[in-house]
Image (cartoon, rainbow over all chains, first blue to last red; front, top):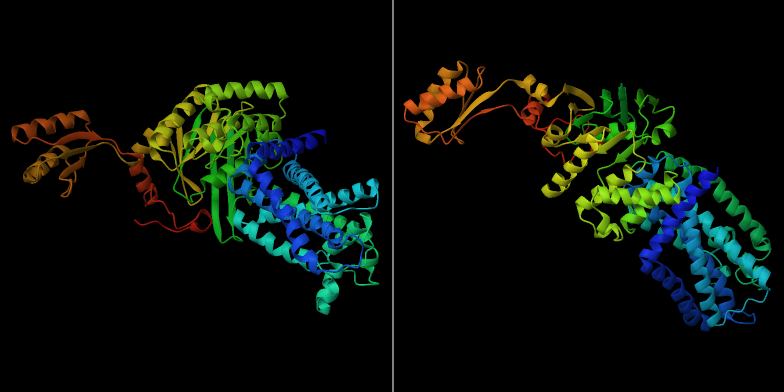
Length: 265
Length: 331
C-alpha cells in the first residue's frame, strides 16, 4: 500500500518535472481559460441581463471554472495516449510497481495542474469584477468541489486515452464528448431558452449541477439557468456529489483494468 | 540451468482468426544469448511481450529464472529488464530525470537511484548528455539510454526487442559494442532481430521463427551446415564463362550453377580449400584470370530462404503484425 502511493507520486512528480522542463505547456494551458474568461465577460456580458447584483461575471466564473476542469478529461486522455504510443506504458508495466500507480499518478498530476489553472483563473476573474460573497470557507469548498470534479473527469480520460490508437484521436474524441456537455448546460446562458428535450438534458447534465452548486457555494442565488422545481436544480450539490461518486465508481476500476491489459495498437 | 523457458505458447488475435504464436517453444541457457530471428509478423514481439509479463498467452507455459510468468508476474518483473523497439523513455525529460524516475520506480532509495544513474550514464557514454532532454538525443543515444533504464536493477534476464532496428550503421555498431560488454558481464539475453548479421554477431544460439513457431534452432554454424556445405564461386570475364564452367564441373563433380548476369559460376564442393586450389591451378593453365574466386559458406540469408521459402529481409510493410498472420511472402 505504501509502495502503491509512493509509486503513484513518482509518476505525478514526473508530470510536474515535465512542466518544469517545458514551461510552455503550463503557460498555454492557462492562457486558454483566461482568454475564455475575458471573451465571455466582455463579449456576452454586456448583452446578458442576469437580474442579480454584480452582473454576468458572477454567474460566468463558476461556469468557466467547471468547463475548464471538465476538460481535464481531454488532457488525461491525450497524455496517456502519447505515453502508450511511445512505449512508455509498456515499460511501466514491465516494472515491479503497483498495478494502479501509473493511472493514479497521472490523474493526480492532472489534478495538480488544475489547481494552478484555477488559481490563475480566479485571479483573472477577480480583476474583471468577480466577487464571491459567501466567505472564505465556502469559497474554498467550492474550489475543492471543482478539484474533485476534475479528478473524476480525468478517470474517463484514462479509459479513452488507453483505448484509442493515437493522440490525435484522443484529442478529437474528448473534444467531441466534452464540448457539447459544457454548452448544453447552464454554464453560459439560461437553459430556459433551449428546446424542451435539451432543457431536460441540461438540467440533469453534471456540468449544470456542478455550475449551480458552485454558484451556491460562491454566494449566488441559483435561479439563473435552473429549471425551477426539478430535483437536480433544487439539489445541485447533492447531485454533483452523486455524479462524482458514480463516475469514479465506474471509471476507476475500468481504467485500472484497461491499463493492466493495455497493449500498443 | 535454463533461465528462460517457453512451452507451447499459443496466442491468437481477432477472436482466433490470426495466430500470432502457434505452439512456440524455446529456452535460453543461463548466461547465454539466444537470438530470435524472423521476419516482421513472425511472432518475435509477441513472444517477448509474453515473457516480459505484458501479455498473456491463450495457452502454454513460460518461466523466467524458474519463476512462472503467468502465476507470479510481479516476481518476474523484479528480475527482468526490457528494452523495446521504440525507445520507451520520457522525451521531454532529461536522461538524468528518466534514470532517476525509473530507479525510484524500482524502489531504490533516492541516494541509490542517483548513484546507479551516474554509473549507467558513464557506462553508456551518456554523461555529457545527462542534463539534456531526450528529444535532443540521436537515435543511437536514445536507444542506449533506453537500454540503461532496463539495467537499473541489474536484471538476471534481459529482453531486447529489435535493439538496432532503425539505427544507422554507426549507431548499430555502438549498440553491438554495448551489448557485447553486457554479455561478457554474464547476463542472460534474449534478443529478437530481423537482421541475420546481427544474430550472427551477437547470439550464441539462434532460433529461427516464422508464423509463430520455431522452425530451426542451433548455432549459426550448425544452421548454415543444415543448408549445405561450402560452394566454390568464381567470377570471370564474359568470354571465359563457358570454359570456366567446364573446369568447375570437373572439380566439383556436381551440378554447376551459372549466373550469366553476374558472370558467376558456382558449385557445391566437399573438399574445401583443396578444391579451390585445384580450380585456381586449372584456370591458370587455361590462361583464365578470374575476377573473383573463393569458397563461400552459406549465409544466414540462405538459411532463412531454405527454411521458410521466403526471404528474411522482405519487409512485409503493408501487412502489420496483427494481420500478416499466414500470408506467404513472394518466393
